[in-house]
Image 1: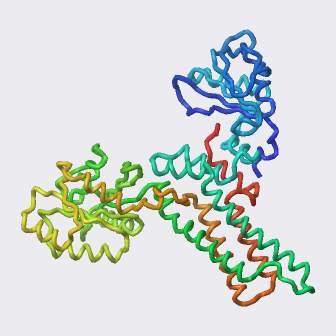
Image 2: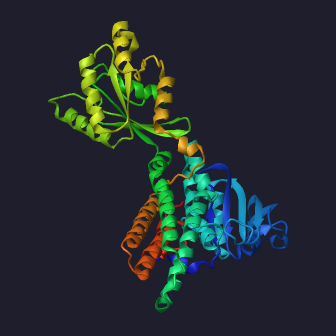
Image 3: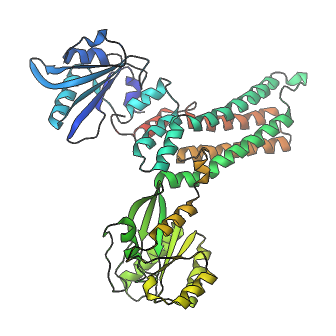
Length: 460
């Protein structure tokens, strides 16, 4: 069990802004004595006499020595992020000043905060549930519009509300069945089995939708792994450089230059894509190049999207047909991208358009039609469900709990079909409630909380 669970009454302090030199830094305290501790070293107004949500100018001093001129923001319990007394001190962003202030406050009775301890206290004090607390970390780490919106929706309680509604309906039936167990000799029915079946089937549909949204949620949170695959010298590295607008990959006329995969990210339409430039697909006797080709095939199988790139001036229809068949067998969505427009003839282009009308024609070297390619890439991700405001599951822990919930609900239906006794039905319902409760924190263990909040940054 993490040590700070038993020290919840301490006043904690940490730097809330990133490490390093900057214009300002914010040092945050939370706890019963946060205002008194700060007041002992702050020279300005008496902070203990000030109203909540006020800001005050003054100096921080260690004895007679002035450390810095600061602004101090006061938040009085329960009107703060943690629902405790909170003070935020804005200092100049010198690392020397920051260290001096932290050491001063620790000598006055505060202790250094552990990772995620501010957010953990907010959860323990009922500011929000566990799913919302986890969304705080996701919001901090969001690097695209889509991941930002998903985290914000979860932090505001959209996901939690759906889970709470599911639990409340199940709790009602669970209590009715438990009541029946107290009247087994009376042969009374407080909970209609038909109504319970209707409810469980309805809940299953909701849970299934949430589970199925995880693929999209994972893409939104972690980016779309997109492999650029094709023969050597098809222009894969040139395309990666063109998409990134920088010379990230080595470009050469010598076939087989790329021996291992090169990855980088680009934001397209508010979604992060992890583009992976791979070794060219061909048979080779070069041991190192062969290893790269094998890795390419593995990357293709694990990708969410493949850009099949071929050189219009060095590829015939037979080869394209063969490659398309292989890609279809892999089962990963792919886009046919015809590169080097200036090296082809109109007849071959017409044949391609007739047989594969969804082919995207580009010139990576001249950066022609890249916008068309980006639009097609974004289209295949299919963010319609996300953009209509539906809840999207982005957390693997939530996905796991929902999967267990689904199995428990299926067990309830099996029990009803086989007309098992009430105690077994009640047991399956209680398991469903347990797994749903794990998501929002109604069911927790200290180890679970320690694991979740240890992944937060210090100061949050």
